[in-house]
Image (cartoon, rainbow, N blue to C red):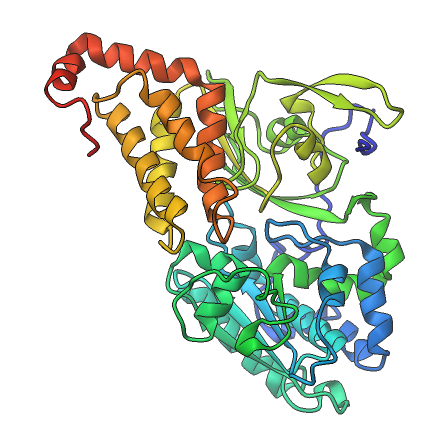
Length: 464
């Protein structure tokens, strides 16, 4: 795997706001008047005049990957749509954003809803969708209201609904609220929920959304940030977009940085033009005074954790290998994969030297145990056991053998579930236990020294 080009100058890291072009602008608001004043819906007006095959080809040429977490090429996903079945095609904009540490889509919903709507309508025309849906997480109540108002404004101006921009193309948008369920972020679970059923992820095959999705019809499911890229691709051209940043992962990513940094927030960075260290130090201001970075989770809570003092051996473009520190990892998908993790939803969670890693994992494990839909036995039982074991250690009932037991449970979840929630729960456990193993033993020893052993003697297998 080739590494992207890394800038060799000493300039501090900078943002490149393409998707976030309106976010934080002085005087900007969510009204259609503001959006139109900056050329809004002009791309849509031109899009409905172009051949659909040409538009889909532009998306494929752009090599833009989905921004929801999986990183699947958007053009390829559209190419898989079953256009021969005779069934209507649907487009779903996934605005569930339920991954802990992820907060990038919310800002677009609240401050720039018309960019999302224009992106959806451009995408719908390109794939000839009969209807579009926005599935928004239930907690985003104001976001739901903002989108409803924005859609009504766009419908009144002829950008949504019948005869879009004076063409013969008709397509409407429906906003549907979720019920605060993590698993609805998974596309087949989302589809089940949207159709009125329980949010159970479906087995692939046969339930590939592009073939058998909403109402058993071909369905494209794209993230909020992803659909916002569609007008940019149609305006700039797929070839031009493919040359922004890394060839293998073009464009920009919006990184949501939370946790123990001086300036948490959202930062839009061109892929490969900034390292993790530059983002956290130059843009986020570095660690809090008197502290130092200890670990980061790079892509929402379900990704494997990285120790700040880790080093990796990576393969260079010329076939040689070199050593890389965590802070030197370029902000693109391939570089994080080389280091044994992934960018996921680009939600970076920063932990410093004040954080108890056992307590942090217990918190995450409790979340995944609560959010498991219960459909798959390894996930249903495994997440519960991981939560109970970590809680047991935190409360002073831990045994030395619990450390290996914890990892064993996680190992037996991976690859044995319908959806990725199982892996999302297991990966933080596997990486946390392996990289901070000494902390677990030390915590158990310390607790035993102050009386934990007495409790263990009375009930060695207490789980709650």
